[in-house]
Structure formats: C-alpha cells, structure tokens
Amino acid sequence: MNIDLRKFNYDNTINIDTDVTFNEEYFKGTEIRDIKNTHVEGTLSINSLEELVANLVVTGTFILPNSVTLEDISYDFETEIDENYGNIDNFFNKKQNSLDILSLIWENIVSEVPIRVTDGSEPKELNGDGWQYTSND
Image (cartoon, rainbow, N blue to C red; front, side):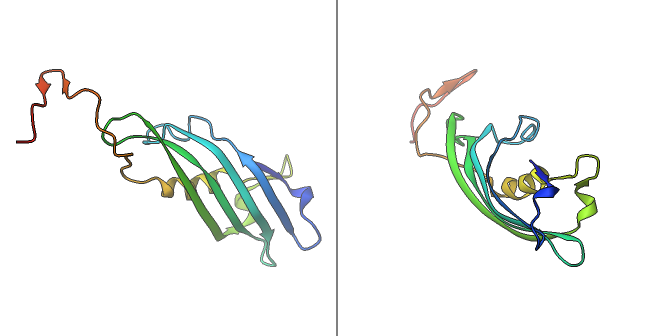
C-alpha cells in the first residue's frame, strides 16, 4: 500500500480510508489461508522529528483451518495501530515520492491470528489411513 507523500497536508497528516489486499506470499508458511475484506482507516503523520506516526484501525476476515475438521473457517479481526515507527527515511521511496506501509499493517494483523479456531462442528469421517474411531468409551 503506497502512500503518495504529496498528499500530506499542511500539518503533515494524511487521512486513510481504503481497502487493502495481500498476495499469497504474505501468508506462505502460516496458518492463514486467505485474508478478505481488509480495510484500513485512520491517519499517518510526520512529527517534528521526521518520524512516521500511525493511528490506524484495521479490520478484515482471516480464512483459517478449523482445528478439528481442517475445513475453512472465517475469523473476523480488528486491530488498532497507534505507533511511532521512527525515522521516515526507513519507509520513504524517494524515486516515487511514496511510503509503503503494507508491511507495517501486516506486522500488526498477523498478531491477531488465533492459535486455534473451531466452529464446534465434528469431523464428517472418523477414520483415516490405518486408523478408525470407534467410541468414547
């Protein structure tokens, strides 16, 4: 998500209200199967010390494997980002006069992924390769 630095107003603030998409590279090696309806709203500002300050709310839906059945399950999330990221030069692309904040957003939403999630449903089959469930007794 590239932010055009020419949009900063006189007090060095940009209002953000946009949808974001993540390609599959982001969730490779994680339990996340997909991310849908990700929306970012809030402000980015540059303070007097030339530091990037984010005040954002990110909402969306993770598609995760059900811990019991391994079928896809939707899990809504919301996270608030209220952080000073330090010197803006660490994020600034001088050739394009822009800031890329997608990695900052990713760092915050990936911490919202639960360790396990289930909708309470039972597996359809209670057998597999070399095993079979017979009873609780």
